Length: 551
Image (cartoon, rainbow, N blue to C red; front, side, top):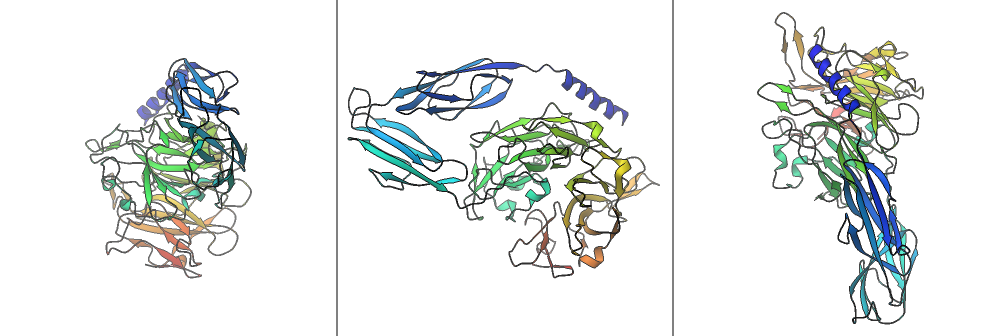
């Protein structure tokens, strides 16, 4: 333990002393009155990906980039690994086309051909592409031409006036600003083995575990699926595998692999949890990955890894490894506004657990002074369990009886808006021979105004005489805890659920929601690929007083 602590401290000191390298980005428009470039000239940290957007003024069109960028893709992404200079080139058009906009969006204009050697005379062919703003959709063109085609190819051989009409989309867009537990409850329940193959790699060669995120990543109103590969075929350590983003076509049945939205997609080593939240406050979902590192089968230990972050930008997502944090055995994470400053902070399990405070832009600083506990945890969630207005932290993990390594039991650290201390905590009841907790769910089953705690457990008991374990990681068992007085809980499993244990593979996540829309709560695991030995699904339905098995 002393050696591990020394290594961790060394890494922290190294990361703190590492010089931050800045580079200058200089942008300009040619001609200067032809349009505007965003962002403006500024300095950026080495390795930052910047998305540049050219917006032409009236009577001008965007032609392309010069300097450190080339081509005419707009917006375009540039990696700042040295000082960069970029010029956006605009040209004035002379053909008689007048464009106006109704609603919220933009029109991109591309010259297809010109009629003669003179610049853009009458007879020029153009392609107009309408791009709606967030929460809007394109409806139609009106004016001298009426059409719903997008893009629209147009030959300007006379004076033409055209209006692009946008209307509010009839979809509800999630803001992703609440506690992280909420965003596991999507309207999707999938068999992940049914998703298409990507890059010639069969998804069945990978175990996704908790590294799954449900969110509307392309902002079209439909829930998409983001998968992080957890282990390779040979559990190869220190090998990163790209994230896989599957976009929903709107049917909740077909998901198409997208390879363009995520930039720098080098992926994770072995992410145990994909945590959804709007970490940079731009109304788009971001993802924090708690990465434990891959298991080295020959030595039977995990190599540890840096956590990573998928952060939204104007045109998609940037993926980055959080090397400013210690390389550790990150096994789980949860997010909430811990310090009440309006942005989402993160708790992640490591050696002793870490509170990561957000600066509002998705930059996180480790604050070890805000959390005190001397035992390792494997799962965590935030919830206001005692209804006092502060989010509480519930931490779970190994509680098999080992005197120095294991937790004392699943623990609630009661929030006060400042920190989480063992002196303000409650230890929850254990279950003999089922000493490993891997997930929590919350639901007010008895309608008393306070949530019961549902725990997913797997087997394990420490045998002190031989310094070994019995039933280690074998089977599954559910536990349901009911509030009993102020900040205390008692085991009421048998009163709330039938068929609460078995010998099959453990249940990774727990979800409690009406997944089939029949008006009754369902209790079920992460995905449909997890089945009982008889081939049936793990699923229970609430009958008004108890969860009973259901197919």
